[in-house]
Amino acid sequence: MPAVTETLVRGRAAVAWLVAALLLAFGSAGIVAATSRAPGTPARADLTWAADRVARPTLDAARADLQVIAHDVQRLGVVARGAVAALTSHDADRLQSALDEGTVLAATIERLAAASRTMLTGLAEFGPGAATRLGPSLIVEHGAMLTALDATRGLELTWSRLTGAALATDSLTGMLLDHDAIVADAAALGRANRWQDALSTLAGADALLARAMVLRDAITTSADVTTLNEWLNRNLRYDVALRALYSALIDSNGRVTDALRAAFAEEGAARAQLPPDTRGLVLIIAEIGRGGLNSAVIEIEAIRGRLFEALTPVETPEPSPR
Image (cartoon, rainbow, N blue to C red):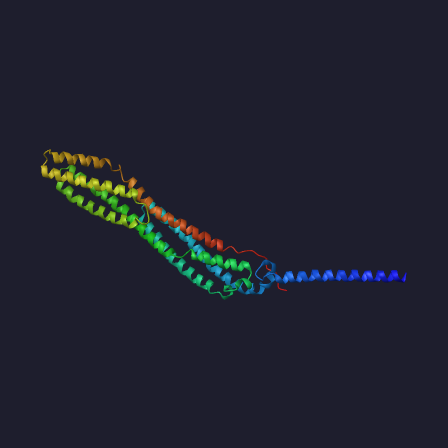
């Protein structure tokens, strides 16, 4: 019996030592696993909590600046759509007002964005090694803000170019409408057999058409002017044909000659190629201007979307300090 008792005691002791060893091993593994997690991950958010608290107010201040910029960009989009409407209705005063407001807004946006970008890039907390100090949510927000602000680069220059193209387009509409009116006056003088007066009147139409072609060249880089070119070429052909007809009438002194017959034939052919009225012209030019301004609206909306997306905070739980 003493031998059996001694054996049982020894067995119990061995089991106790084995259990203790297992508990110690599992505990050590848990400590190693916990301490091996990097401080910039959700697994060890407690290690970045203090640094996050210091950096958060600065990032929130930058977000407030970004909010102002985003609303200015939103307003610029509204102004751009107003410019499109004014150009379509050939409302020069309303167009100029919209373009002026857009110029101020675009300059303000670029200035504020540059200042905010400088501030964000200069934050020491987000410098080298930030991932070992800060939580991932702050780092992601900081990068998203900088990316959104970069989208505003060149906005002022883009708006300036579109302003020039829109004003040129609107002026072009006025010039070509005036051109048509002058040609109609010249034709009326021709029907009254006042051929020399008709030629003198056509000189004013020639000048307007030449200026219109200069403006056409100015907007070629920002719009498709294929249809406009066709309209200009047809009107140029008619102006030349009408001038040749009146010159032939003066030279023949009213007698029917081969030159006069040829001039009459060319004038009729050229007139047949003209549109029946100026409504098509207004639509053509308005479409040219809308093309450039609509591109601006799309670009502005894309920038606005990036800014408001960057304003959405990255939600991650932040534990209390231990």
